[in-house]
Image (cartoon, rainbow, N blue to C red; front, side):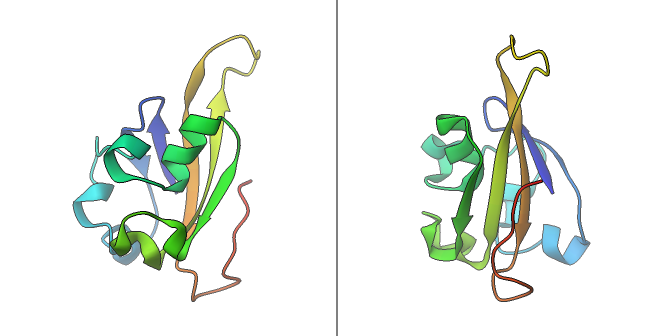
Length: 105
């Protein structure tokens, strides 16, 4: 699970330590940038651009080392609906484990 701000900077992440250390390496460190201008197509960056929930599966990621992941991201807005985009919440998994597709809650 990952939370980024409206600029795509990592604010919080949680999950098993082996998964957090996974193929993304330093890209999962605090303040890492996940916007599309920095890392190309990815669920976080795409959700920031289109402002709708998205899922990016395996090789749909631009960065080859991210092909090990399936990620679902959903933008977070002010609950009153009057504020700007606050950031994005993301759930990720290895596509070869479990269902292969996940849905953002």
